[in-house]
Each structure stands twice: as C-alpha cells, then as structure tokens.
Image 1 (tube, one colour):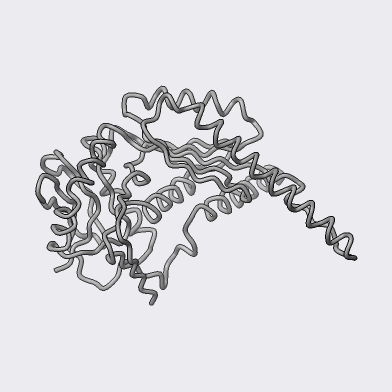
Image 2 (cartoon, rainbow over the protein chains, first blue to last red; image 1 turned 30 degrees about the vertical axis):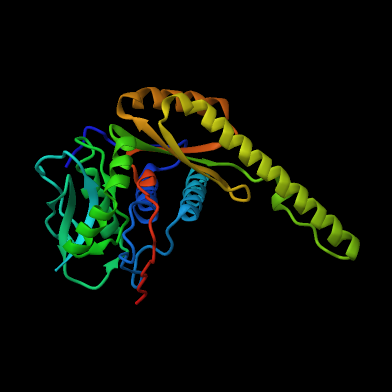
Length: 73
Length: 235
C-alpha cells in the first residue's frame, strides 16, 4: 500500500537501496513494544548475519569501498 | 491459536488494503478496549529473522501510518489473544500516555558517522616498558578526545533540531565510527521544515557523514517500562 508519507533515505554518496533495508531492520528488530516473554524468533538459516547499528556502518563502508573501486576502474 | 502482533493503534477505523503479513498471512484488526491491534494468525513455533519477514512486519505497521500513529510491537511478538488483552488491560494508563505523546507525530532517524581520530586508531609497536606506558597514555588521551568530540556532535545535532522535535532518543558511541544515532519525534506538519533544517546543518559539518531517514512509525518511542524476559530460541 502506498503511503502519503513516502520514506526517504538521505545519504551523501552511497546507494540508498541497501541502506533503506538496513534502516528498516534496525527499526523493526531493535525497537518497539515488548510483551514480556513473547519474543519468539529463530536465528537459524537466516539471511541476516548480524543486525544492528554496527552492520549499518560496515555496510556503508563496504558500499563506499565498492563505489570507490568502480570510480577508479 | 497464536497471533503475530504488528502494532497497537487508536481510532484507525477499518483496515484498507493492508499488505500481507508474516508468512503471507492476511492481517486483521482486533478491537481491544479503546485500542485495536493489527494481527495475523501464526501457526509455527518461531518467527524466522529473514529479510522477507522483517520487511513484511515493517510494511504492515507502515500501512496505517498515513492515517494514525501506531505503537509498533517489536519483531517476533507472538501471543495469544488472551495475552494481548491482559497486556493492554494492565497497561492502559501507560498506553494512553504514550499515545498522547506520539499522536500526530512520526519518527525521523539521523545517524552520524565520523572518521576516528588518528590518535584513537593507530597503534605503535610495543618494544619496551616505556613504549607500553606511552602507548597507554596515548590511548587514554585518544579516548577522552573521542568522548568529548562525540558529546559535542550530539549536542550540536540536538541544538539544530530541538525547536522542531517533541522528543528524542539519542545513542552516543564515542569509540565507534557511528558516533551518534538519534531518533527524533516530529509532528507531521513540521517534517518539511525539519528536512530543510537538517539539510542546512549537514552543509555546516562536511567532516561528518549523515544518514537521515524517515518518516518512520515511532519505533524508538514505543517502549514502555515493562518486565522483559526475552525468549530467544536459537535453532
């Protein structure tokens, strides 16, 4: 469903696609109301190695590095 | 029957074209007291932390953002209907207070990344007791400098947007590149002004990198003081 509050990711030089996903994960997985004893998640066979602020930074750095390499090629 | 809970809402009316939820399950509105909860049926033991599931959770919560301000549940909240009713009944005053704070607002996220100072990142080869002590002293000075810089950046950001925010949650990490992660609670009508203000602020600090995103449902402002016994099942 489209929303009148379209989300935006403002970055300087990085591709915003991965950042948008990582920002979503950061919000969904790290924050929100918690009902006692009722977070039941499975972390086996996942496609997310680690989720958190640090992964955002490392992803940004990786994206930055890829971009730099592309520019020098 | 277990339910997957996405978010708590007030005065949302009927759902319109809500996206499918976790595992492709249809989402419905469960009226509870003066509130309602967006839920879908959930039949398995645990919720896989996958890209699809995380995005499905986010999409459902976001689908009502243009009509109301939801209180999102954290990813992986699987409960019975009775547990949900008990939860809401027991925390009704706290939930009302939280809705009063959040009503009409959205969350904007600002992450600031900096290059760590050379004093904090380079290490000399330790060849004697003297160089060890010198290295230690340098590390301590570097840490103090980093902490002071981090605090300055955080205070600076707060000063830039404080007239436009109703509340904020800020994490400062002096020893890390991602030095400040801030969530700002902003009234919807003030979003254009907030964006303009941040854009102007970024121009002033070219040595820093900014990741600005939003509007988000107020994930960072949903927490209410609760007893929390997490049940992480690693399989």
